[in-house]
Length: 268
Image (cartoon, rainbow, N blue to C red; front, side, top):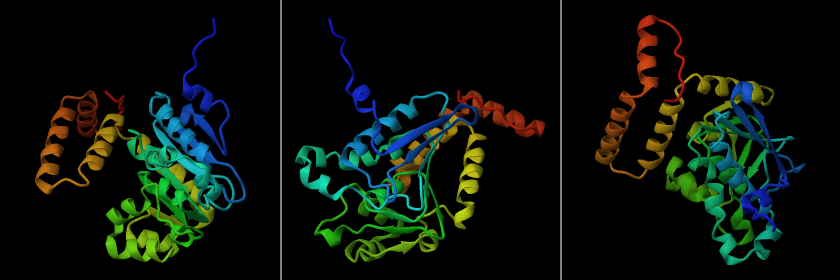
């Protein structure tokens, strides 16, 4: 009798255009786009990226996830031919797949250098932190193809920078530099290109020091209250605060503060 195989196992048996590295000692997982020179993201790769994020979210050895790329460009976008070949049902899942970093309960850092266009920009916008260099160029160039962003790019960008700037980027297929993205509040930090890796390492180590439980709670709260009224957001914040008060991590944090020592959180 043949054994049933979950579709995810088959889909992840050979990763398409990217690799995954887990450093258990540093509680870090790196998802690395690896289709040089421009790291074009295929349709199949989008499905796989979602599954990998979901898998790493369940991995107790991983605290922080880093999304980066090999070479001088993060990604010039998606496989154009793939859009014409994909079924309407498949195309309808594009935004869901690319939103995987946002749904992930753990902090996700996008490391962007060089071209970060189309879906490359969209998946970065779904991450919690975006580290850029002075070589970074962001763009949503779909208008040049007679299309619009289809994986959440225009919606997420508008939440961050407002309708005027988003129209400028989307309707003109305009490129914005890493420095401008930082000035607009899209990028978390902008550094010299040769400092991008060290800035990433520093952010990973900083995030590891906090309570995993408090970080998961903060991410979920902020994501879910983005569209809420101020009254609703404050109410939900209060409920989350109340639940954390009974956690071991909160007790450890308070005791460490009074003892003037570093806290040792365990995520409970």
